[in-house]
Length: 265
Image (tube, rainbow, N blue to C red; front, side, top):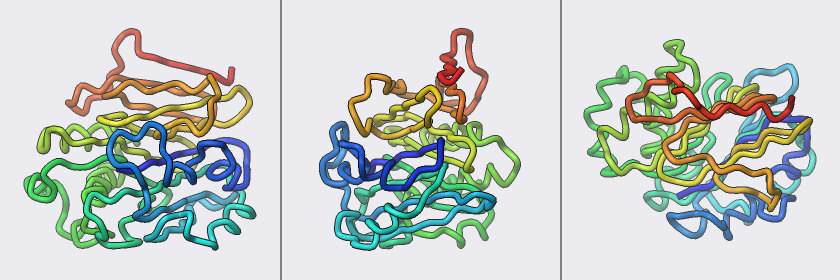
């Protein structure tokens, strides 16, 4: 349904992260290698990034394919950042809400993306609307499943929940109400990355002394890329990656033997 990527590392031009690699997110918009659902991601794209000294990210989003936007090439060439989240979109419902439906969604310091689809949308989510204050429903950027999932996550973040716990709980709620949903979620606040693998592909690359990248699929053939098992929560900083199995209950107590990696030490 989509491809997305989050990057934490040394400041670099956006193009070095999103365009230059041989199988970059830019190329995945028309030629993904590991996408299980859909073939072309031409229904919008977006990139969010953080500037030094400013905790609130900037965003650039469009409703059309990334390859058709001549301004993106200039942006990617000159804008530099050490924290990025970007996505290319294959819409569940073609034409739904245009640019407003393109990830990343944002609030305060947070950037969010959803790769997947909620089964039975929108009727399957009717009961979950009671979890949100009416004002939050009226604030939805788009009338899409991804925007609604973001509202569920954001409500928990605003209540003080830790990022990984907020993602895990939202996945549990949506999966219980709509079995068969694909819920690969990606969230960053500029200094950490949280993500879920639930029904679609997710990979990460942690380079010693270099960046940490979490993506729907590898952007090159570096053998250090590792696939995240399905039904797993990933939590990453610039130095560590932690993988925790998800059982669908929303809990976050890692069992003995949880996969902990410290690739930069």
